[in-house]
Image (spheres, rainbow, N blue to C red):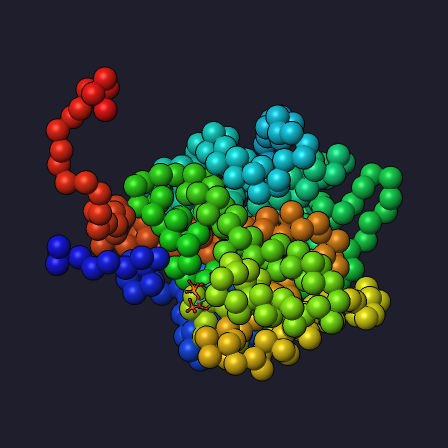
Length: 392
Ligand code: CMC
């Protein structure tokens, strides 16, 4: 019509202004509030990254202490929430449980759903960041048929999460600091990624004035798809299907075949047309975890490294600028940490919650914010008269 442009997938439409995350996809750069992701992942911790994303600056020592204490204070979930879990079939996908339980939080914490009250917004943000590990661990425990494990507030964020997932009443469980550090790093790497599908979903849901718990549930639902958060699960399944190095060429060929819908999972990105800076840190973390656990010669890692090498040299991938993304190595790492593939996207959702909530908060506080309402190009019938059922 000339009044708006046709932009499927919103590849060239900026839907908002944001000061949170900067990506230069051509150069392979990712900055949060100006700080490079690799520096945050190597020198900082997840709590610090949360504070940075939410508040705009790295915390001072006292700000850090206060924030960590506040997050720790909110780690428990309402005891009645247990019943909600028990209503799910025990073989339910944990992402299905997450979508339901997080959406239901607004029924438990209605004292932090007034989006116009800055204090309530802050409490909702902190509750979400604090409770996500508990909710995710409960989903895991439920699927395993094991009792829920309560949070332990003397542990760090990542340690506490591993504890809630892997401690069982019959045994002593001690979290390995190297593995906790790897978990923390995985959380940092997934914390935010500007206006991807799930974040845009959170903003769109929030633009109508929906409460923050409902908005985050919408984000979780969107993240579930294999082209987005489900890619780490899909990437690991693909590596297992390939199975051995000698079968790689066959799969590379399949990925290049125009008539075959198969894609190399963990390769390519809408924004990065260079090596994803998170993938580099992830690869290094993957090696650290396997070394700590004494896993030598992991067949999946061998397939992954060889596949990466072959694809990076292949004309098709070079020409289309398809590089490994963060999901390529995260699956192997999470599997080594002890998580089943169905939990991979759950971990992504846990870590991304801070990004979603920071983006939601920024939107609510932006005076130019309006309800999201994309336009369309109508390609259906022009007006036509109604025909009675007997005459069709
Ligand atoms: N394997 C083989 N070919 C590919 C791949 C791949 N993984 N990714 C893209 N291509 C080809 C695609 O066929 C197309 O070719 P042509 O121009 O000849 O039609 C071209 O590259 C451009 O692809 P596109 O689908 O137009 O690119 P997009 O920006 O819409 O898609 C993507 C990005 C991530 C969905 C896609 O690269 C993909 O499906 N990758 C595999 C799934 C994956 O790893 N997803 C995780 C994304 S990162 C984590 C996250 O943000 O959640």
